[in-house]
Length: 241
Length: 314
Image 1 (cartoon, rainbow over the protein chains, first blue to last red):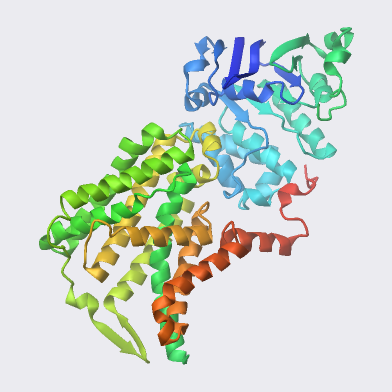
Image 2 (image 1 turned 90 degrees about the horizontal axis):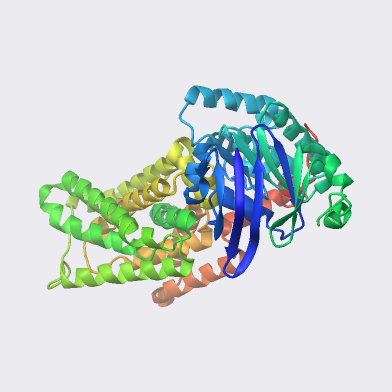
């Protein structure tokens, strides 16, 4: 479904991502973990068209995304839950959710999806007419996921969705992600909480600073690797790496 | 100050404040969406003024319609020709571009429409007709100004709250990149913002020219300054903040003028700016931000719920 080949992303002369290759198959839950500054967010921002790559290709169902605008990429079915949630705090919860469906024209299906996220996230239904600024961090994260879901994505990208959340809310976010995966959605999760990501994902890529993949595999495969601990050190307990 | 004078100052303040709020709103809309401080905003008023001059013989209604259409078109062309090519440039480039458009349009006016004897729009006697009720004096133009400004503010509120484009504008004002990531089309939203700005500038221009009558190539400078100051004290980053700033400035100007002794009245503007500085010292991010922080403090000991531990509702 998604295939990244030799991706290099640079800011001026600094390479944030250097020769990254990975793939995500339809229906898979893939994790991408790494320390701060490893290039995880740059990778996601390049997939969604905000950042242009210096080199490499990003293929989505046979189409090269590197020449597409964020709007076109969204319409192809890739939706991002960004780092720091970035909900529209001056809009109401309902407006935040509805604007997420902006790229869709199938109104009946949109209405159905909005109803579905209200059922999935009861706290959003309860606070529907309140401004986004009035929600707690965990509620805002649920809102950011709901906003991405109503876009009807075939591939859902999440950037550090548990950052700054209390442990119980981290559990809730992973519970939501597992439920989405069980429904057959394709998920690419970028996280510093490596332990939880590896446990939840079908496969996980471990990214090292400088934007290359150091390890890749299922939870069992990664744990069986001798160099796993060294690649993993400092983030194994899910703390900031 | 007697009750009648206080009431008079109050009415004048609301009337001027409503107009200032509309002015500040036009500037804040572009600042919010593009982080653009559009110095050429005043020139839209100048373009409207000269359009009124050339259309005045057609009658009031055609003059208003032609002026509005002209200012909206010039505003949208400004975006298309000058700002779109530099949209992704740093804010300083946008600022310099707006300076260039402002000076360019002024010079063009000097060479063409403003050349020769000063032009003006003839006053309409029915507009300047004065009324006196319980010691309060007001003209038809003042009533009209208040009604139009109120209608524009209500209309803008409805547009921003109830329509799809309004919600997209509010989202883009807050986080333009994120708005694009959820599918809001940048070109469409920015064009809409320029069209609305043009509409607001046309409305202010018509009321302003009907009040003063005189036209000049630099006639947009004072309204631009009012919009900037109003926006700055209210908070240019938000539309409600800009409107609040406009009203505050209206009260400040009229309050200072009414309270100063006669020998100091020629220094009124200096006292107004001292008041503006005092507001900015207390509320550097604007009055709206100050009010919101005070409200948040009143609601909870922590500034925002976003910083609170999450409520375990799920």
